Image 1 (cartoon, rainbow, N blue to C red):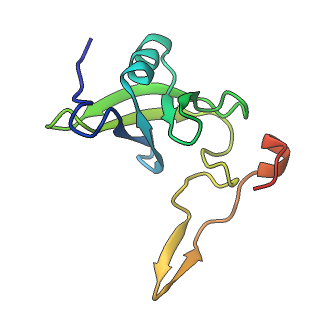
Image 2 (tube, one colour; image 1 turned 90 degrees about the vertical axis):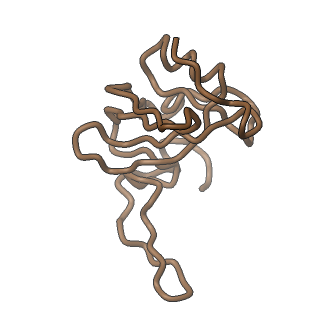
Length: 127
């Protein structure tokens, strides 16, 4: 198995999820050694949730799974790009396709993409 350098950054490293065909950046999350192993074993993106302090298989509750189509590793072995096939309409828990749906406009954030699904229905919780 490919050994990544989790030590340098305290046990977690960034993982960028990118659409495998369009190259659109969908989200940024973090992986631990355990989530890395599970991703490689299962073929689906599994991250480490810093808020829950637990492994998090993306899409487990929403059905919006991320099937791994390729993985890129940076030169320092401390950042990865998951090239994914995104199931469902989007990756963001807010209902947007990408977590990067806002742009800096002066001293404000401006929404530049509309939501593509109703997050409250999908997650059955308030945003």
